[in-house]
Image 1 (cartoon, chains in turn red, cyan):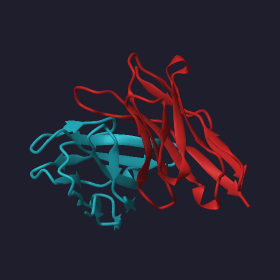
Image 2: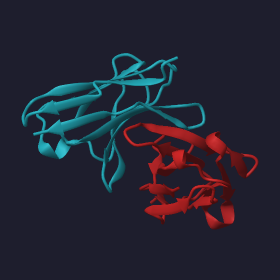
Image 3: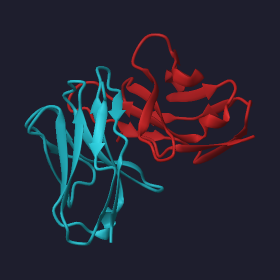
Image 4: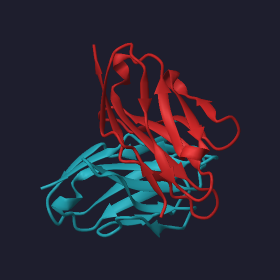
Length: 114
Length: 111
């Protein structure tokens, strides 16, 4: 069965430090890959997506993610975290064709210390 | 371009009452989804639709019904609300490469 794993439930970083959030998936083929961010009391907002081509994708708010087929990973990175980045981050995976039902990870809560 | 909107934003029901949550999108998307989000449970798919007039069950459909009479609208109904349905409900639509556009959510409390 397809699955998405975000190993870290919580991550705490200091403002200005670099960030990497992990995402691993289990699929037979190369899926579509996404990262979403959810600020408190808000809906989910798309940060970035990968569906083909360059394995390093740039997103909004200074985030980037790298697709590594050999590791079945799609980790999210940011070189310098801002206090406003504190939020919940979700990795999601989808397959093309048929009824499109993406699978979401459980989320990683990012805490930013001043 | 409003994207995905949801009404109402908040609602308190008593056990056994009914209500309908409305989702609207102005992006001409075919696919629409209803999720619930509970602490520690992530997002769980309730129902989804692949086009006007179609609906299908997701992971947790019991106690909910849906309708997609118009392409831009996707309604979620609770016929007889239960405390276990206290949650935050999100509607989403699907973009051209599978990305989803989410509404702001409806916070529902069932007493």
